[in-house]
Image (tube, rainbow, N blue to C red; front, side):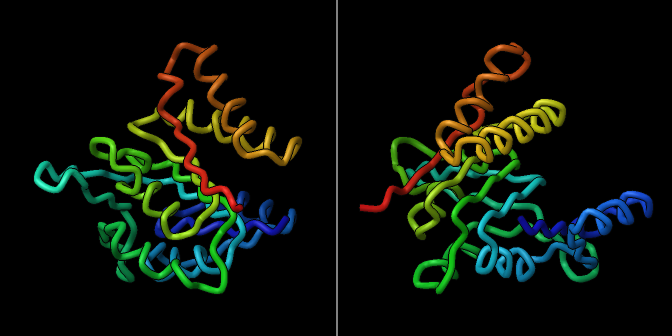
Length: 189
């Protein structure tokens, strides 16, 4: 497994950077811009985004717009809409097998339309599996959910089983609603 970490303008302590390098991780310096995220979406097998997100429903159309909070080259905030990312994926030579969006409202949608919001639009664009959050999830729960999800995924190789194992932690802990993480899948025929 090759892991690339892109901390953006969030500085990592040198001892952590040294440890990551010694364990074979790649740490990319520079801001996490839209282009950097797109490069990962078009080359990596698994993309895990940990950051802020938002969804704005559109009462008129029944749809809405999702966005991730990324960075500009100068480090300023860049609110990157789903329509700035997703159109690059259909027809691409490669899309990730799995996207994990540990971002508020990455799985949120309006009404009953299935392909609204970032996770729904990623499925429509051809990403086979997306685990995303419907609302805010406290960082402690996000960390434990992530640990349990990837442990179960590595052990079983089955995404929906891993998602259920991770959700069961939230159910058992009674700290956060177990329905916050949502799994979107596109099955191949």
